[in-house]
Length: 94
Image (cartoon, rainbow, N blue to C red; front, side, top):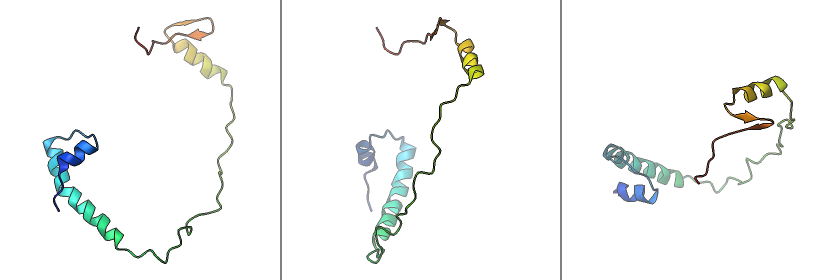
């Protein structure tokens, strides 16, 4: 199987080194062949819903908790602050 690695990399918007291209040129045909083998497996007797469950979200509800000591530690670590505000560097250029 002949795969144009540079074309695949371009489609995937990847910049590959020569070493990476060489490695992929060796590995990619094996991967594609393996996927082709998986296509040969007969799944006609498998119900698509066989793995669905009645499980529901078992996570706890989020509850906001005050931690005054932690809040004060964060505020005291800030280099610039005033009143009830913490000053951070701007993210947009002027």
